Length: 174
Image (cartoon, rainbow, N blue to C red; front, side):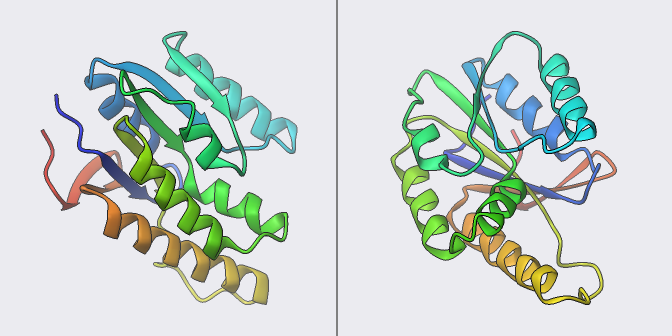
């Protein structure tokens, strides 16, 4: 299977997007790199991260990088395929660290352009719900929408996943 340079996989919580993205990367036949952006702030998140790691198995090189995705992408070779899981947690980490997401997004897009490997980015679609009732949540929702739009504009393929089923928005599945 040929994986385009950049694939964006969007979906809601527990939609099956991560499993779909992992299958895309695995199908390349290349060495697999998983760039994890989650920070396990509590036991539940730590358990979830361990469960995901066990499900992936030992054939993935894991890079844990909650904020500096350009540095993580710089460690990748053309003999690898990359999964970034996920852009939503990365954005959350930036906002919680009081980092302006706009220049960080520009740096991420530039790093994706330089990356010699095919990359799959998982991101949550958060704009289909109600308008949040507080300023921080609205700021996050707007920043997530802007991030997804920039990634989708750059991506060769964009796939929405709902109930584990892919819907191609841009490009095509192999």
